[in-house]
Length: 247
Image (cartoon, rainbow, N blue to C red; front, side, top):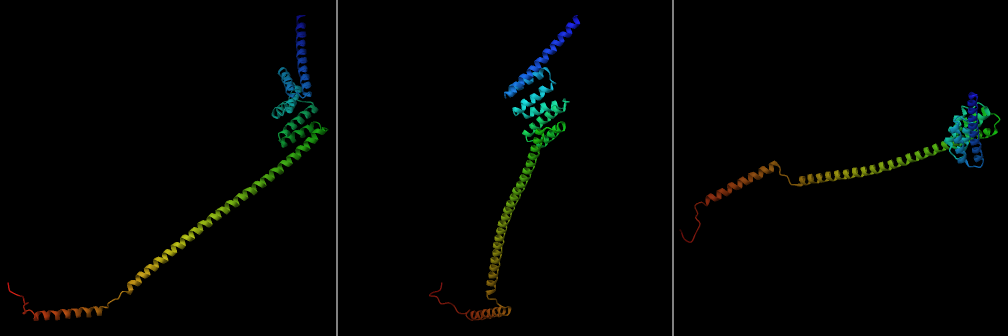
């Protein structure tokens, strides 16, 4: 009798717990339909505290995250649920919601894979087909935009390279002009120096030069004049200079 009482008590507790979880889920769905998504999140989270592996609560919690633009949290809830789901339609719905969360974050490649998995589990899901087409188009647009940006970057880079080359060419031209001016100035200075040296040489050449023969004749004449002068002086040696009185 006591054993039966314990079993009945456990059953009552489990029933009460199940009713509580179901009540929390229902309350969360009610808040969700009223667009009170944060309140719905609280209800679903409380239900998961009592039963962490409850797949329905996890899916609903992911939906409340999605509506609040909490896409990372939503993806986490969906991913945790997908592996545990066995019903194909439920799994398709989880993949579909996962694809939408990825699509909102512009993760188009990942969202395409999610929508494909949704269609594998439920090929008749028209919403998944539409969203798959939309994700494929967005991916193509993104790739085209990336290509255009790459082209624009290449154009800008080429333009910058051209401007840099033009600046370098202009600088090289200025440097060459300066070098040419310096070379011209050096050339003029050298020519002036040569002209000065030529003038100096010319002035030195313009001075009268005496040949060796002329120099000897002049020297001989000077010697002869000196001898003649000495002769005259000797003739006058006996003559005294007249003075008024002797000392």
